[in-house]
Image (cartoon, rainbow, N blue to C red; front, side, top):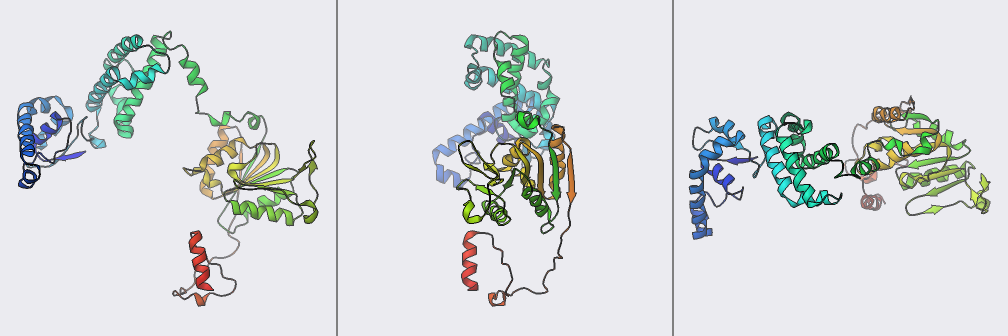
Length: 410
């Protein structure tokens, strides 16, 4: 939404297609900077406002509704127009939606963007012109349910003009499938093979297994990951999925110390243990003669897609992360493990339960409490690093800060 001071300025802005209003006020500063060009623009806008204000204020539903609030010349109100700003959510009603629909249908029928989109599906120019006209007529009559004014209000609130444009194109394809299937012969097939609404159906091998899902939830230092790793250590074939490369190496070293054959896979490294030096025995040998490890410790993006007895997915709450959440989703939906242990925060339980319900899998939740008490010191170090004592742990939040703090302490 934009703030318009006077009725004349509002009409001028609409008449000139929403161009900048800064040269319309006719101030001395504007004239000094813009000269004759600025004065001419101001005069032109004022004349256009006088000529078109009655038409605009009577035909635009949003302006007409706001007209009663603009009795005084200098009163400031919010003003929304299709070519300018956008009204507040509470001002978007059925009348406004109908106006925007008519505008959007006309743009779709006459513009090149809609035709280019349709041409990708083999729709000719003649078919496009014929059926867009019929589509527009049907939509304006209210015969298309998804394009009725009340149904458009949430679309306009959430997506604005772009959301409406996308809906108009999508409903046009649905209209063609119903009224002119000969025009879009292949679009139904394309819709089917590109449908991404049911990702749990992609992992056919995982769906054919009876998987047991166990969630270990609790705060830090509660032993949830320890219990999951104990089960992994005793598995014949297992995998540990870590959010961090350092954690993957930590579990790798832990397994080797326990005499378990383990390999580590990250985006930068792939390491197989030296069995003779470690004094451990491989779980078996492949046909090629390569040793098979009992456990794979990896970053979650690098998880190999093969059968396991036990899988451990750490920090399951990361499934809600906008950038990396896909990796946890893929692991939960696609890992071919008979027993999957999920470790993380209790906040992830409702989401995991809903996902597993879609796969007809039950979730067993095990809750843990902090093993040691957490106490806050009565006073700080007061900025003096010499107060650090043996056994203390200093936590920083960047690699650079680690080295700077280390130097200060030393």
